[in-house]
Image (cartoon, rainbow, N blue to C red; front, side):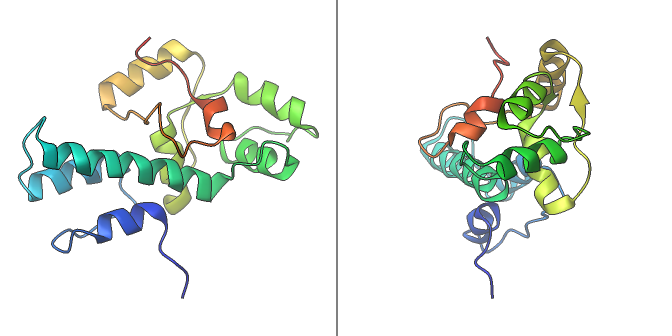
Length: 157
């Protein structure tokens, strides 16, 4: 039996919680917070949120990879965000991804849902969507690989 994915492992720590892997991970964290009646800015919620953020980053790394020198990793990411035709070089992939704006919470969710991720024409339209849905991906995490760092956009800056 395969080891659980990072988000599954995170939510499995809470025996009273029934994780729905087809829902946005942030929504599931919200449901978890309500179930356990965690109040905002409490040490318990902050600790759980920190562990959740780490699980999100590890889920990205597990699903998309971290090796920025591997063309297959870049092409897999390009395919997942709907870039077609696939660039035939890492430089081509990087350029195509730089012009492609996706919400990283939604992108990670595609790993379990298989659905197509919504893309945005501009960083500003991505920012508006992210603010309205509150789907913020952790910007700083020790586990973030260089591939993930390449996709991060300044939403609040």
